Length: 326
Image 1 (cartoon, rainbow, N blue to C red):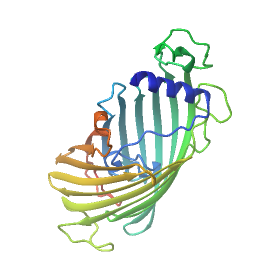
Image 2: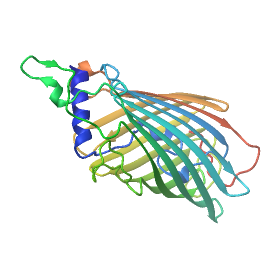
Image 3: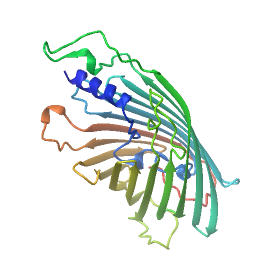
C-alpha cells in the first residue's frame, strides 16, 4: 500500500506542475562545495569526498543519495577546479536523478589573509522514470485492487539537459567565510511531459561559517593558521521556489574526534535536529550523521542516516587561502 501511494503521488506530479527540489544533506560541512561553486578548492589540496544518505529506512520505498566529489587548488594560478557526481534514487527507483558537475573558481586576494572567490558550475542532468509507476486510473476503489491497464502515456521516460550555476564568497583566512550562490540560473525543463511549468526551479543560497581555534585562541583578526583543535559554526539559508530551509550547525574538532549538532527547519512545521560524530586520522576523515527522530508516527523510522568520507592529499606548499578539511 505504501508503494502504491507513493507511485500514485509521483504519477500525479508528472502530469501537473513539477515543483522540483534539489537533494540535500543534513550537515553541509561534510559535503565539499555543496553550497556554492566558489567553495571548490577550499581545502587547498587534492580532496576526494564520498557522501551517502538514506532517508526513511523503515519504509519499503527507500530514498538513497550518493555523491562523489573531487576538487583541487592551484596556488600559482590562484584558481581551483572540481568535479561532482550525485545519484538520487527515490521511491525504490521510481524516479532517478543523475547530476554531473564541473566547477571552476578563481581567487582574488584583497589584502593579506583576505580573499574573494568567484565560482561557476556547468552541469548535466540525466533523469529517469522507473517502470513501477502506478497511475490513478489503475486503482479500482470498489475492489481495492490495482489493474495493469492505464490510459496515461508519458511523452518521455527520461530527460537529459544542461544546467548552470554561479556563486561568490568572501573569506578571512581560517576565520570567516560568507557567500551567496544561485543554482539553476536558466531554470531548465525537467518534466516528463512538455509543459511550460515543468522546470527545475532556481535556487538561492546564503551561507556563513566562523572558526574559533581552541589552542591558538585566535580572534577574527589575529593568528592565521588553525591548530588541530577548533570550533566552527555554520548557518545557511536556501530558497527554491516555494521551498525554504534554514540550517544551523556547530561542530568541534578535538583531534582526532569530531562531534557536532545541527538543526534544520523549513520555517514552517518541519524541524529536524541531527548529531554528528567522526574521526580524523592523517589525511582520512570519516563521520556519521543521524537525524533525530521527531515524528509521532514511530513506525516510519528515523529521518535519515548519512555517512561521509573525505581523503585529502596535502601539497607541500604554503597556501594563502583558507585551509579547512571538513
